Image (cartoon, rainbow, N blue to C red; front, side, top):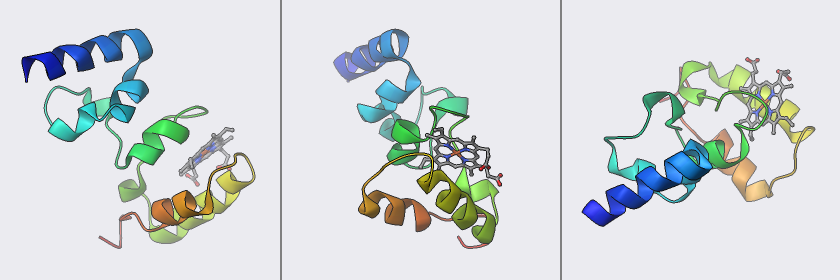
Length: 94
Ligand code: HEC
């Protein structure tokens, strides 16, 4: 417990919140910076490079899916990962 917390804190300091999320530090709930907490690890890993980590739960479904289609032209990602993001809960589809 103590070891895990210390390692996560170090990762956050050295590599940034995205790396801490990638290491699974966000799954414990408390401690993580609320602003950096992503709704899915893929978002933290791949979608925070050009803008803030997107939050699908704040967008209507049609806007979220349209944005994903636009992002497909900006970056490469396995199809299965796009499908995962498209299936995330949006504002009007919990
Ligand atoms: C290469 C840079 C880049 C990456 C990587 C990127 N985006 Fe974007 N994103 C943009 C730009 C530029 C805009 C603003 C123009 C637009 O909306 O198309 C944007 C806008 C958005 C918006 C706002 C759309 C709206 O109508 O409010 C969402 C949502 C979004 N991105 C989601 C994502 C997701 C999800 C990923 C990861 C799969 C991602 N982005 C990765 C560049 C990027």
